[in-house]
Amino acid sequence: MKYYIMFGPPGAGKGTHAVAIREKYNLCHLSTGELLRAEIAAGTQLGLEAKALIDKGCLVPDEVVEKMIASQFDSVKGVEGFLLDGFPRTLRQAEDLDQILAKRNAQVDGVISLMISDELVKERISHRAAIEGRADDASEETINNRIKTYHAQTEPLIEYYSKQGKYHEVVADAPSIEENRARVLALVETFAE
Ligand code: AMP
Image (cartoon, rainbow, N blue to C red; front, top):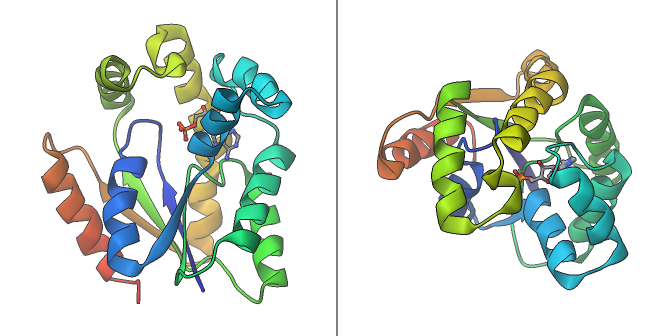
């Protein structure tokens, strides 16, 4: 089994381009944000607790997302690997993921990083707010906090995976989705099997 990570700030296009990669390489696309939004929609206790944090632009606790990911690894069948989108987001999650994968005799096979500027993050998210209606896209304060959270807690993963030779970055700032998708797929081809 292969394990790939979609990395990047909010609004970089991780979810959008994950679809193309998933299809090409027969992967299961796992988005922790989507899993959390499903819990919120189902009105579970976990969803209620997560919503309060998500609406503020904060991260939910590491254990919560790690449990969700591990349970998906256990239950999903019929794929050649997983494409993690929005996970890991902290150093602790990255370290724990290494342990979860070691137990499955596996490892992270590559990190696909989509880079855009903070300015473009703001532009893309306000555009998405009108289309998808996500509560955490609608408030400027929440968006600013998500950008801050990304720089403080998630950006250190660039060094973590670079040191392991697993970090692959593409600038995903083209105005058209097709152009960005072509860039992303060309990057993935350089290391994925
Ligand atoms: P996303 O859809 O990836 O933008 O995630 C939406 C929100 O869900 C984030 O702003 C976080 O509050 C929460 N979330 C998603 N993935 C994680 C994660 N790996 N760790 C902690 N919180 C997360």
